[in-house]
Amino acid sequence: MNLIILGAPGSGKGTQSAELINRYHLTHLSTGDMLRAEIAAGSELGLAAKAIMDKGELVSDDIVIGMIANRLNDKGALFDGFPRTIAQADALDALLAQNGRRIDAVIYLDVDNEEIVKRMLARGRADDNEATIRNRLSVFEAQTKPLVEHYRNQGKLRHIPGTGAVEAIAGRIRDALDTE
Ligand code: B4P
Image 1 (cartoon, protein in one colour):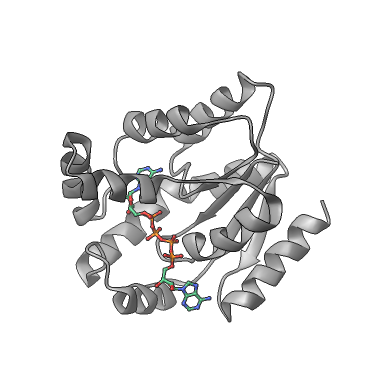
Image 2: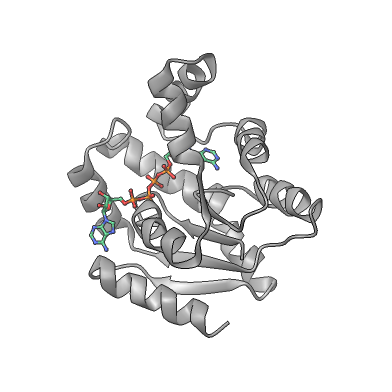
């Protein structure tokens, strides 16, 4: 099985991924984690990515597509925070098709903006200040939200209300996937 977890910044993608990878034995592919690892390692890519992430913008499609292409293996995968643009979604379809694979379902965690701002200010990561958060939310609306319609049209979207206890949300995701 190959899954995507999609949602606004701070909607809980990373949080819910932890349970999903264990339950369905998936490789966790989080572009946000990969970029933060590059920053921590002080690589050239990390330095360039940090400046973009601190502004709340998206890192270029070529960079994140390359990172995913390097890590795909034969196991099913959970794509966390990727794709974030239609170009990334098309590239992912092409990469999977090379091995006769495809995306089976897309979990869309739906959380309203005020709840997101509250959560991210509490988390306090380097890119979690209010100005950056507001910009990340508008970047999400403009560049990533079109993916909701894109995957709905393919019949793959599973709409999950993303507020409430972490375990309650995990239960909603299980219910949505187990009726596949
Ligand atoms: P990501 O690392 O993907 O991070 P995120 O969207 O901020 O967080 P996530 O949704 O995983 O939230 P989390 O579970 O942590 O992206 C960071 C940046 O990297 C992007 O802005 C971009 O610049 C760059 N990037 C990444 N992928 C890219 C791509 N494909 N293309 C281009 N650029 C890319 O949860 C957030 C907080 O809420 C946590 O503190 C958590 O504890 C809390 N929380 C979770 N569930 C909760 C619940 N049910 N109730 C209350 N709090 C909850």
